[in-house]
Amino acid sequence: MQYVMFMIPSVYGSAEADEMPSPEMVDAMMTYNQELADAGVLESLNGLHPPTSGVQVRFGEDGSSVSDIESAGAVGGYWILNVSSHEAAVEWARRCPALPGDVLELRQIQEMDDFPEDVQDVVAGYDL
Image (cartoon, rainbow, N blue to C red):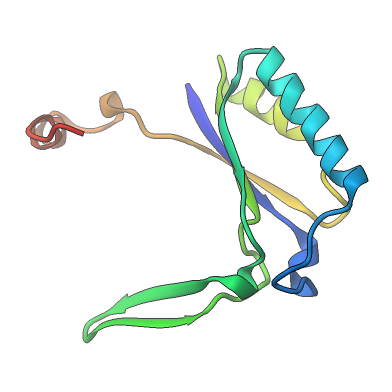
C-alpha cells in the first residue's frame, strides 16, 4: 500500500522566500531518505519552497481567485512510501529527523480497488 507523508514545518511561520535549511538538517534528512530507499519503501520525494513563494487558487460560485498561502499548516515537502501496512508507515514517520513543532501527516493513497465499480468504469475510459 502507498502512503503520502507530508512535512508541515513549524519554521514556515518565519521563513523567508529564499531561506534554506542548514547543512546539518539536510544531512540528517538525506540520511533518513537513504534509509527509506535502502529499505525499498521510498517511491519518490520532493521538498517545496516556502509558502511565501507560492499562491493558492480558490474556487467558488463565481469562479476562481488567487491569494497568498497562509504559512501556518503549509506543506513543506512530501514522500511517497510503499509499505506493507499502516503501522509500517507510522513507524517510518516516527523515525523522521523532524524539528520540534514540525508535523508529519500520513495519508493512504487511493487505489482503483478502493472505488465503487461504476467509478472504476469511468476511469477505465482514460489512458493515464
